[in-house]
Amino acid sequence: MRALRLAYAFVRRDLLTEASYRANFLFGLAGGLSNILLFFFLSGVVEQASPGLSRYRGGYFAFVLVGLAVNAFLGEALHGFARRVRQAQLVGTLEAVLAAPVSPAAVILAQSAFPLLGASMRAGLYLVFGAALFGASLDATGIPAAAAALGLGVGSFAALGILSASTTMVLKRGDPLAWVVGLLSTLLSGVYYPVEVLPRELQTLAEFLPTTHVLRALREALLGGDAAALRESLGLLVLFFVVLLPLSLAIFLWAVRRARREGSLTHF
Image 1 (cartoon, rainbow, N blue to C red):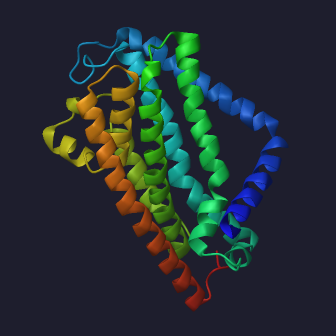
Image 2: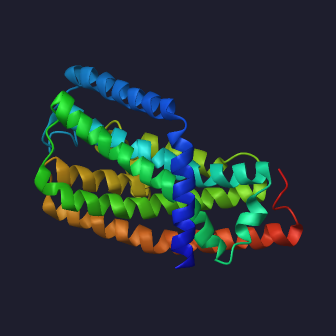
């Protein structure tokens, strides 16, 4: 119950902050629309029969629209946790926040509730705008499965973000884990092009990234893909979730204990 109240307090605080900077929302919306427009025009020159693309309905535009939505969410999940830890270090509130009568793991999850909710909404808006304004063909019957995939993806991405926050707490500067995971996910997971066009060795590496399976599950659900492939991707996402989230929370707790022992919680 305390954790829920803490999450509510953080969400309310962040919502009030965002409401005072409405231009940021409008600029973000304009940026998202410009991305969609860019790939809408680009889709007209992409070969629709390329490996891994012809199996989906809607052509390249629908394919990359899902990639844009997930990539926008991944960026917030990867960098949001570390950014908030770093911000709390800089303003000197990290030690006070972690002194709340709840687990530090609950604190880091509660503190990032609003950014994750906002990123989920932006991902949804990408899909809505793509379908409503640019005619992307999305299968409405696949929405429940897509929601399940996105929910599991939230957990997996959050775990990676918590690991990134742990490295920030220890190293104080830089965010190497988020940089590496973000780069590999963008290049190998099929955000902008099918995984099948990669060399076989890189395809194998892509299977170890949760982003690959989130994208695959969403496309199987929304673009008329294969039901068996959808079930397989959902199963792998469950595996990523149950392994990565507890592991990341344990590492974060270790990082907090280490920082407290060294007296470096407020160092920056």
